[in-house]
Length: 137
Length: 139
Image (cartoon, rainbow over all chains, first blue to last red):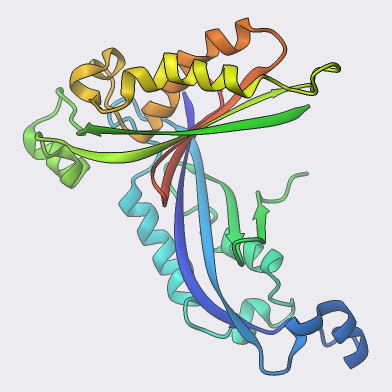
């Protein structure tokens, strides 16, 4: 019996949306106030969705404590209260919330055992959110 | 296909315990959730149905009808109850959030699918604002 288990985590980080491949004017046009030179921050919600068989003995898809540990060590310790632009994962890509979502997925993939990572959703504000479900070929 | 979701809340108590295990193993696996006196949550239930909007009404399903079905088939059994002690399916299954999602699906599916038009698509149960489980009818 396949079920899904989700958990929401909070973290705060700063970023600046700026691409070195664009001119100053193009950056301004693409990113608006998100391109302001000194950056800005958000309280992000990271929602992690795991999928797997509901264990008949425990009634659970995944051990919540193990999931918390994976998210804390792999994601929150890395991204909470930092400037995302300085993280090596954003050396080549702009830390938009789309790319943050993919980065979180990449960091967690394979770590939510025995379940499988199904989706990462990142809420940047109460009105913006992004979801990534891995490469869907 | 259009997906329509109705949300409802209920409050209930439960505990996690596997009778096939020793008390020590229950404590080790379930931690504080294994406290035999139980504890409670304010649950939020999200029921999603999928279908085509009716050409005359523009509805996938009538929301009032869906509210009544959820009330009759689920909330009347779960709300302000001790799930382990008072709800038949949890005498044999541990009332984890995952199993509540599956049980809610089983309670709703006959009524929703018999009504014609929309099909039950997803049941999501929030145990707290941060923790939820989903069932989509998959084997």
